[in-house]
Length: 256
Image (cartoon, rainbow, N blue to C red; front, side, top):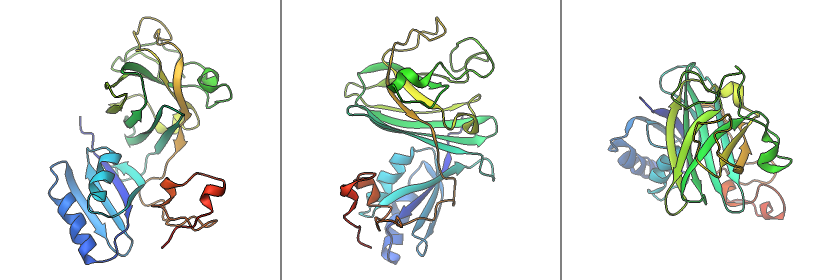
């Protein structure tokens, strides 16, 4: 299965030497099949089966700052939808991205840290309600009234995404495609990581309580996010990831 996505980054390039440095790292990488660099727009676009974070780290190995600003398909010219899930718990943190590659193929790409080592069920749940944490997210998303099943089965809940596995350090990296999940249908719902693996033996998979969850939010598609500074406080897109979302910590304006 082709897991390539088209990834758009803002990169803090200021001169031709910066462009040369970016060309050096992306042009020879075996898992980057196509790229475009625009110095004036401070923009780098790549086609790759690497995760968004892996490409960002590759770009930043040049000493420049990079931030993902758009994601889309290499298989379809139109933007079919993209979403992001940001886990911001005290212990479990991570980012999971969903990209509709074609009308029948969704890419799920994530990195999560702070998990207990071992397997954990990953499911889309019906409600984007975090009032009582994961308990208020409802049941697995199941618009067709199907039985619970494995991710590769033809009959299953749409929200059944199988298991992910955390290494001995508690980090889980995963990247897979799904033929049932549609990004437009799950935005506003929730993604839940459970304490135990899914054994596929009952309607809830016997996977235990949710230990991490977040709302699935719409994400920018390719060339849809021209922002480089926050209008309210002047924080640059590259510095924004290092400051709080709100409060006095944002009062320190970023330099240009």
